Structure formats: structure tokens, C-alpha cells
Length: 210
Image (cartoon, rainbow, N blue to C red; front, side):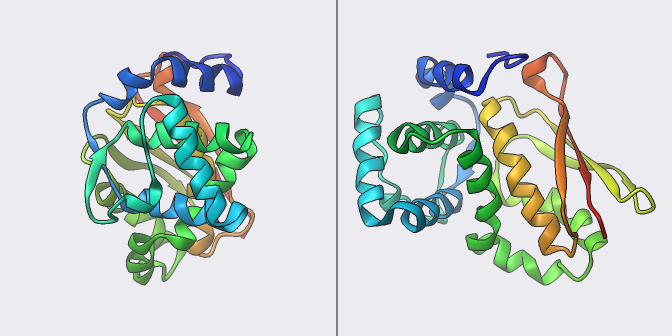
């Protein structure tokens, strides 16, 4: 599912059309990530929002109730983009809300609270990024390619992870908050390479002000 030059709505449409293929992707993701999504929806829409989410999942053909997800259990990695599809359609949300849900996720993640002990400096946070990945996924890998303290930028590479372009969008919010937890101010992220745009891996360029 190449996302090159496709609109966000086109990506959503293809996600729905290719639901079964995405749900059957190899690899697993830890249930804790769905707990952060549950908290995001509950904060925005209340308990009824979680009911609406579950109802929308039924309409899309694959039942999913975030309240039944076990944080320490592993689930099919494709269930994550499917959960985003359900959320966005249930509340008529778009790209902005997906990025915001990523930005809010580290604040409510139990895993991130444990890893927060390493947030002694921005440099320590950057070095721990590959460790964050292994706590969340059984496939793919993340590595720090470049760190330039003078230019206030660094580059992360994600390899062997071609599940859904919705991940790429979500990460721009998620990692911005991770950098802020490490002490960065006004963190900005841009995906400069993407496996859905015919590159052999994903790359994210991070910049900040302080």
C-alpha cells in the first residue's frame, strides 16, 4: 500500500479495504499501547466514547473493545492501525487527532513511566530510543543514525517495519513528546524516508530549539 502523494483520507480508505491483510501482518505489539488509546478516547469522549469505538469496530467487521485489552499481553501488530481506523471513523477525526493521540501517548504509557528514569538528559533519551522499540514490538528495529548537538538535530532509522503508513503519521506526535520528556523544547519531526514511498526503510529527522 504505497502512500506516496496520497491524501490522509486515501490512506484511511485503503486501510479499511485492506483490513484483513493488515491484521494478518507478521509481528506483535504489546497491549499497553491500546491502554494509551483508551485513555485518549476516554479523556476526549468519556465512557460513551469507548462504547462508540466498540460499536464502530463491529460495523467495520472486526470486533475490538479497548477495555478488554490486557496491557502486558501481545497482540497482532496490525490491530494497532485497525484501532486507529476505528477511532477516526467513530468520531469523524482526522490526521490532526491521530498525531495528537501519538503526542499524548507517552504521558499515559506505563512502559514510558518505567523508562523515564533514563530521561536525565536529551542525549540519554536519544540513546534509549532503540530500547523503547523493543519494549513495544516483536518485529522491526530502530537505530540512531546521527546526532548533531550543534545543529540540534538527530536522525532515527526504522527498519523491517512495513505495516501501515498510519504508523508514520502517529510517530510524528509520539516521538515529539518523547523528546520533550528528555528536555527538548519545540521538538519537530519529519519523515524523510518511508517504506511506503519506495524506500527500503523509514527515517525521521528530529529538530528542537534548546
